[in-house]
Length: 386
Image 1 (cartoon, rainbow, N blue to C red):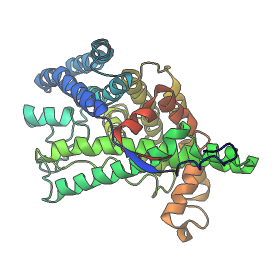
Image 2 (spheres, helix red, strand yellow):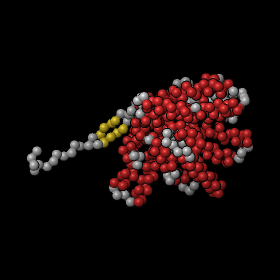
Image 3 (cartoon, one colour):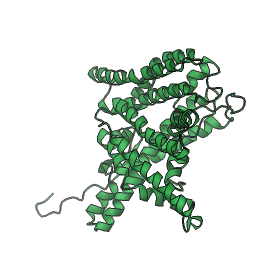
Image 4 (cartoon, rainbow, N blue to C red):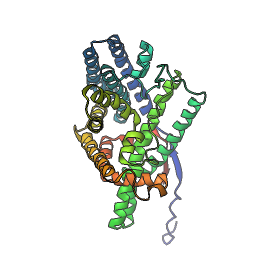
């Protein structure tokens, strides 16, 4: 090239796909296996006391909750010290493993309080399948017999896993290069106004960060559901389109988002308060909602090495207040709100999530600070343009 020749043009940008890492899956599976090794003997012990005394089941539940406080970090430290796993692999493993401990402990507490579904403890094998499951197996309320899945249940669940993995890949690929704030990065780069930055705040919180958590959790629960389907159990649907079909704040938390946690806490908290202590329904509902914060405190403590106690309870406390205010508005003006019947379900849902948006960072920041969005990007193919 001569002195006066123009420089060559830059190479054209190209699309590429980066394959997901196998580490989070392998280490996640290892943590699940270890959690089962710890939990199953305790489930058998709890089963021996199902006829009483009930306080023995509470003691077994406490042991189930306490042991992983040592097992989870000890296993993670050993794997990293041996060079068998990265910190991100261990983070994925700790999160997945914590699900077994959390649900098993709370199901044992539920059994002590008389909240076990009819048939779930018919025999020790069924009890173990129920108590250690990531998603509730379903039982007929009259006969107590397990509800059997249809022949298409497993193919449909495989389809769901692939669909969620596809969208997790898309959203993560957009989010990850910008640290979880792609809309803010775009608005800032283009000199966005305060209004544009406000819109970006909502988009990042709702359509990026919360969406990623929804896709990630529902993906994990779909995998857990398949483990029960192959054992011929029908399973609870853990999410009911929370991002697209929510009608109100209480509808979001009670009937749409992570119904598995709601169902578990209903057995452990709501039913005992109403049935045994005669607590009014509204007070029992608020106590159940607040107990969700305690459930997540425990799970996040097991999952996240840097988690600050109280962070997630503050978030759920805010939403307990929102739910309380909603109940006051209903008492004053009746259910529903103007134009509700004329709005599409997706638009109604988006309005509710926009109302939530100022509180969402108190939830998503925990995941960001711990590196869980990095884990999600490792578990799904990343689409790159450079």
